[in-house]
Length: 209
Image (cartoon, rainbow, N blue to C red; front, top):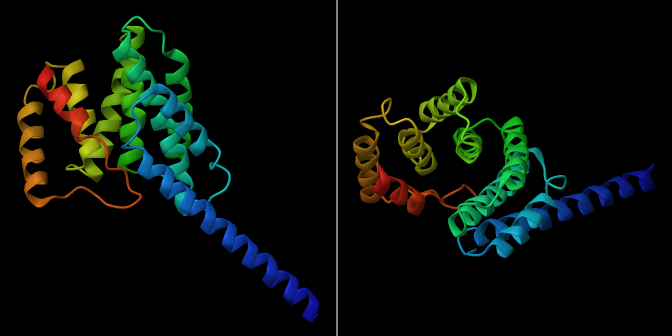
């Protein structure tokens, strides 16, 4: 009996140590998000995050899918920026798959925004504006705003939706700028593992509204 208890305790200890290693690896990978500048670096980041999707507990599980989806989405964005004629359907499809897995594991403002951004990119990339996908994007924005109206990524999605559907979001630019100024005064960007990207992207979209 004692031998069995010792074995169980040993296995629990090994599992706990392994989880700690994977958690640290996730944190290190997240810290790299703000430093990547090339498609190759984003590809590496995608691989690193996707390799962790089966190795973390339920509390952090969603973030591995989230950042894998984010990395694939950013690859598509960067490729389009470098060459507007580039076909990025594969990257957007991959991003959509992982972002939806993140949302399945954790429905929050961050996952709603990422899925919404990817759907909008798919819509714009295909130039096929259908009512269903339009409503889906707007619905994700509504859900995200209800949860975190002053979240940077929520503001980014709102700015992009305002650009895509200007007649429906005429006052969006003023509202977004007001919230951003308040965020700057309070220095309210989140710390740690929670996503913090979005400020630069918002500035770019606002300049186009």
